[in-house]
Amino acid sequence: MTETPGIALPAYYLYHQAPVKIVETSDGGAQVWRVSIDSGGWHEKNDIFVEIMLAVGGDIFRRSAADFVQEVEAFRAHYLVGEGPVFALYETVQALRDAAKAQGRPLSPKEQALIRGIRQRTFVMFEEQLRAAGDPGADPEVAADHAT
Image (cartoon, rainbow, N blue to C red; front, side):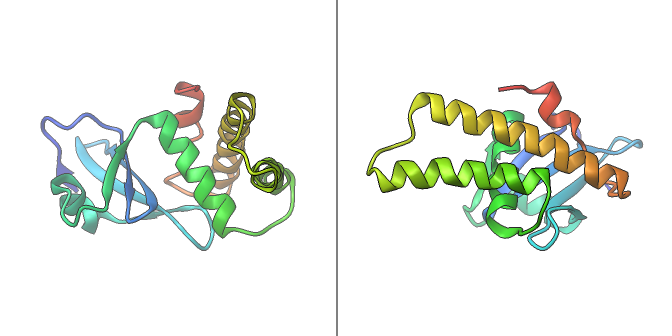
């Protein structure tokens, strides 16, 4: 664990295009969680803490909690395949994006808001499933506490 004086936690990042969160531990240290490309769950990755804090490599970007939720869900929707309500909502988002692309136009503000709302909802649903399965990095409250 790493002491984190002067760093406001939790903190959210994109680390080489993968969502990462840094949370405070019970002893005042920091714990790094990176979303899994295979499962959408969280893997502890404390070894990248210093790289993130020093922004070594230039492919590390800080995100607000609300934007982090959007990034996590875009990542999960892109890499994961499955069945059930979360995946049906991922398909809905993709259908909206595909329709706009087919029509040669950007997403409308209404479509953008709908997608943000769906992703916020799927984040909570996915995180609640992870928590129920015992994933120690799961935190559905990130979306609930930072509604967009």
